Amino acid sequence: MLLSTGVRRRAFWALAGAVLVSAGGVAPSAEAQDIRSRQWYLDAMKADDMWKVSRGQGVKVAVIDTGVNTSLPELKGQVLGGKDFSEAKKGTEEDSDGHGSNMAALIAGTGSHGGIQGLAPGTKILPVKVEVEGNPYSVDSQLGSAIRYAVGQKARVINISMGSTGVSAYFPKTKSAVEYALKRGSLILAASGNDGEKTNLPSYPAAIPGVVGVGAIDREGKVANFSTSGPNVGLAAVGDDLTTHCSNSQGICKSGGTSQATAITSASAALIWSKHPKWTNNQVLRVMMQTASPPAGDVIPSPYLGYGSIRPRKVLLDGEGDPGPADVNPLLAREGATKPDPSASASKSPSADPQSTPAPQDDKKSDKKTVAEPEKNDDNSSTLWIALGAGAVLLGAAVAFALVRRRGRA
Image (cartoon, rainbow, N blue to C red; front, side):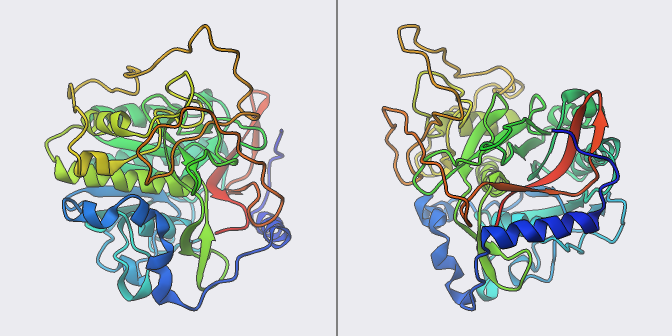
């Protein structure tokens, strides 16, 4: 699909509004005090028990996104001074879209005054704004600068719930920054994308070697239909039916996407790192891979779930996982990878036979693949990628910067 140049933000928002209306928005709730009870995944992940061991204290998480609204009650005192790399230069606290604020809340929200309860409320958020309105070269430049800045500010975990479709050649500065960050001890997690039901194109920076691409599972533990699959998926986490602030109105909405799954994974890494502060980025990632609920099927990593869905409680509560060598990236080394059984029948295409993993509260491994039912075209339907910049035709292909988000939900 080719995108024409010169697409203006005003035109985009008109289109986005039309899609949201046709998808059927979720009405905001007036019962803010009931938010915590709706965050079902916290109970499924045994968050209350994990918080007795670790709350993520001492770990700084960089949220490279649209900014973070520090006036949200659950984020007061949770957000550090950051930097705005966007062309608009309105400051990191200005978040007109709300996406970055929601990611920050899912990670570090305190739940105060009826706000969102984050999975790692002891962490601090470093907001790094890259709301781009320009060509892919600008996207690459801003992402590269944002990652280097986060490393310079000693952010151990770098959360990028954003993505840009295209080809690897478009992102030289981002790739260089990723290599820089990994060598200096940061762990980078990025959304794999929400295009699984459509073109299923790889998303960058998730597809850059060394970055942990995060896929999404639903409440039943199945891979979410919208979750982009491919070799870039390293881990998966809950990314459907999550409670967040509405993006286009006041109140609370249900949301879903690999953005949210990435935030949950970043928070999990922070919990583990806080408990084991002497571990390196490679060791934290290794135990996350080892203790993930493995995908069904004959091949690990799975193109849908990578090494599986995260289970930080296995590390924090059960003491599982061998951190191993400090200087070997387990993702690049493909540690724990298995090959398909040659006696097994040929597998179906990714779009036809997505794998599943047990729901978060289930420790048992599924012994068969599960075919997810296709969703209807309503508020549970496929994804909307929030294009922040104009498309550009380069090398005969197109690239569009996007917030990785589910349509009609957040």
